[in-house]
Image 1: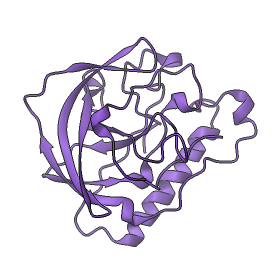
Image 2: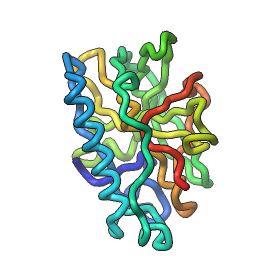
Image 3: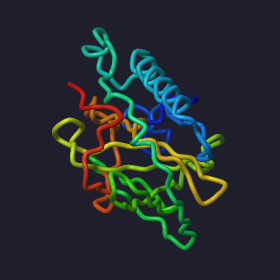
Length: 215
C-alpha cells in the first residue's frame, strides 16, 4: 500500500495545506468471487494501515495535541453487506471542471465514469472522478476518487462526507467497499484543503461502514 492519499486530489506541491499531502492508494480488488473471509481480512488490513499512518508524525494529519494520545480511529464493525459489486460506465466525453473545496482552492477533476449498484434493496448511481494533475504522477495513472455523503453525516460520521479510493477497472465492473470509506484530512485539521462532495453523490440511506466521526 502506498502512502496515505486522503483523497484530496490536488497538487502534491501544496504539501502543508492540502489533503494531498501524503497519498493513499489501494490496490485494485477483483470483483470475481471474492470470499467473505478475504474481504474481512482486507478491511482489517485497511484499518490497521490507516491507524499506523495516523500515528506516524511524518504523515499524520492530526495536530500534535491529538496525535500524542492517539489510540486509533473509530470504525464501524466490518460488514460485507457494504461491499458491493458495481457496474462501471465510462464517460470518455466528460469535460474537466473545477471542483470546489472547503477553502478557496479549486481542484481540477473529470467525471471518469459512473458506478451503479444496489444496496439495501435500492439502486444508486454515483460519479467517480479522476484528478487531472494527479493522473500524470507515476503510480497514480489509474487512481479514481469516489466522494459520497449519506444519512449518517453530522451524526455518526463526518458532516462533510467521506471518500473511497478506487482503481480504473479492466472490465465494466468493480468492487466498492464502503468499509474502506475514510474522512478527508480537514475532518482532523482545518489547515487542509479538501474537495467538497458533489450533491449528486448522496446516498439516501445510512452507510454504517468505514471510519466514524473523529471525536
